[in-house]
Structure formats: structure tokens, C-alpha cells
Amino acid sequence: DTEVTQTPKHLVMGMTNKKSLKCEQHMGHRAMYWYKQKAKKPPELMFVYSYEKLSINESVPSRFSPECPNSSLLNLHLHALQPEDSALYLCASSQVVGKTGELFFGEGSRLTVL
Amino acid sequence: SQQGEEDPQALSIQEGENATMNCSYKTSINNLQWYRQNSGRGLVHLILIRSNEREKHSGRLRVTLDTSKKSSSLLITASRAADTASYFCATPFTGGFKTIFGAGTRLFVKA
Image (cartoon, rainbow over all chains, first blue to last red; front, side):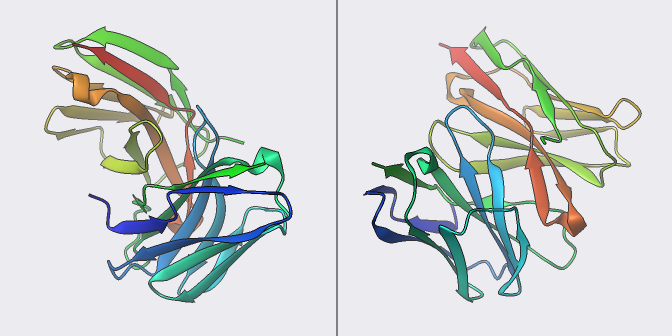
């Protein structure tokens, strides 16, 4: 069982819609991540938050907007997406102090853009 | 660009056989990790090996690391149908925040 919870599990949206993906963890981790994964490909890093501040943005298009309201929550706001943005979006968390980089993943949100 | 490259891309074996997957990376590392992903689900951390370690065991998993060749291998012994999954090596950078995944090996274990 994962201790990182992502909602919704599945999302279908049109190119003009605005939607959000949500992620929650209660392990006390102060680093949280968004990854994007296309079929048969490895996860690709999108954003990293450390202590609720954005520390890494991997040149992600502005139609993806991350938000970290508190140490347990991470959102990804979606607006004006393209069909090629259809993918599995994975949230992960990790420790910051004494960091080894070990990531704890949620089960992902499967996004389909029509 | 990807840090880790893995081979084989896909591997099909019989239950009870051993499965070996290899990973190569390009730059210096503090540690290397292996993750497992069942189809369409999240990744699960399997094992971490530090740069000053050469071999590590965890249950049926054995990981080796050769920093001179910038390569690692994951051995799963006595495989089971439930081991069917994709396996990724991963290396963390930027103080551990930026973890880059290899291309992955898709393992299929036939019962």
C-alpha cells in the first residue's frame, strides 16, 4: 500500500478545460515531486518542491501549474492542455534531511486529453 | 537526457529462473536505486546501493555496482509470476532532488 495518495485516478478533459490533480502524503516528507510518464517510457521529472517552495522546474510548459499549499499537499493545475499531454502523472515524496533520493510514489493519475 | 540506460529492454523467463537486468549511467553518483512498476501503477522502491558499496542483497534481490564501469545490475532469483513488472534504475542528483530514471526493463515471468 502506498502512503502517497493521488486523486483522481482517472481524468478525461477537453483542451479548453481547467482541472487539477491532487497529491497528499502524511510521512512528514518535506520534498514533493511531479513526474510525467508516457506508455513504455520512464518517468520524467516535471517539478520539485522543497519546504513548500518550488526548487526545480524542468522547463515545463505554463499550461501545467504546480502548487504546494502545505507540507502534506501538492497540486498540479491543468489548463489548455494538448492531446500529447495525455499520460500517467505521478506524485512522489521524499525526505530532505539526510537525503538519499529514495522516492515514495503514489499510484498516479491517468490523464486523457481529448 | 536520460542518465541511465538499461538492458535488456524486455525479458521473458519461466517461473523459477533467475532474471538479470543491467543499468549504465553517465556521471558520478552518490547512490543508485532500483524501482519496480506494475503495469500502469506507481513505482515502488526496491533497493539502494551507495557508491562505496559493491554488492547488496534484499530477499531475492541482489544488486551490484561497478563505479569504474558506471554500471549496475539487478538479479532476481527464483522468479515468480508476481515479479512480472517494469524495473527501473534511478540516480539522484542536485542534492538528491533530481532523480533520473533509466529506460527500464520489462520483465515477464511465465507461470
